[in-house]
Image (tube, rainbow, N blue to C red; front, side, top):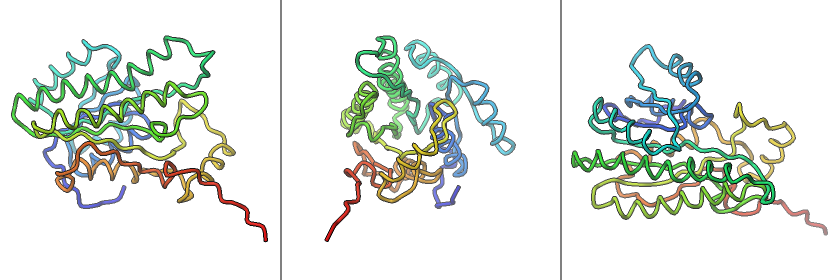
Length: 261
């Protein structure tokens, strides 16, 4: 990871979906700038392995519970209040993206996508904000969205809807929480192969790269550094914004035309 001069010493940061590709990059970014971390993921073993690689210099808290359950989220924030009193930063990164065409989509899959990608960030943001408001403290929420919020793809309409909802939630909550000094923004990371749960062939990765104007996939410093910025004092006047860190992939249709004389 690169050192950009950010300093989050003493800042308490909650990250959901911490064991995934982007999640681990976000974790590493905040760890390197001195933040106190509380990581959440259902992949408990992966989470423990990740913490083992990082620990040695400081303690990292972890929790594994089902984000689909409201009571589990409420109980979690009781633990946060008891241990930390409040947290400064919430990164709603957890999300699922199963592919399915309309005629084949099971309603249980639909419900899971909406519950994890939309309802859980709403509930996490609500409980997180309660603690901050109770302590009269400012804070920052960053929701992880996707290019799909702007451009849906065939076979993932349900996922695109969930991310579009999360982007609108970002804007709505930013206005509602602004009087309390809580900023709410969104970051859309670029295409990054490497997920252990979703295999991508080399041909597919190459085809995706060809669609990205800057010509490469997203790396471990790209979206995380943007998240650090949005959570820092440098962005103290930024709220309700969506930052697309995707090499221009969401800017338009990048097909280089063949010009014939």
